[in-house]
Length: 158
Image (tube, rainbow, N blue to C red; front, top):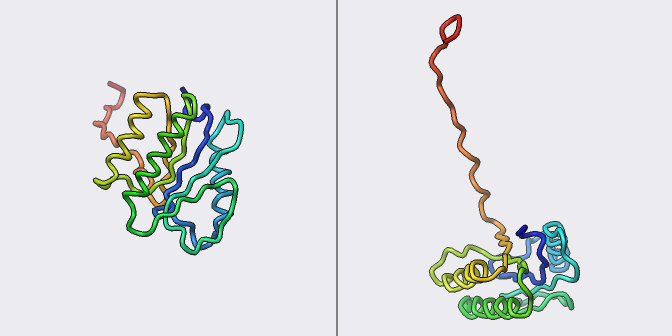
């Protein structure tokens, strides 16, 4: 299955780990995320909904397209649990195969193991796919260059 031919339904955004860049405002970021989901999608029909999770203190943003889930700083476990509950609920509401976009920070921490496990189970045990967007993560290293040193070929051939 081509991961980009299945329908998207939801973008799950860890607002604390992937903040709004200083040069943009919240509506501009939402518009860019919509453009990204459209660019990734080759067969999607219908609206993409957004859910943001994190400390929304001071955020002046209202839109029917995004549901804000406010968590105070330091409530990472509660925030990640709510994201998981929403991802599992989304998978129950959407037929396989569906594709979700996860806008996350680094999932390497020990306390993120449950999150990674649930996403992995939905991918391996079901036909759900996830596009993981992690701003700030370094690009993969380029492939190594192979150099072969050949012995000199005698004049006149081998």
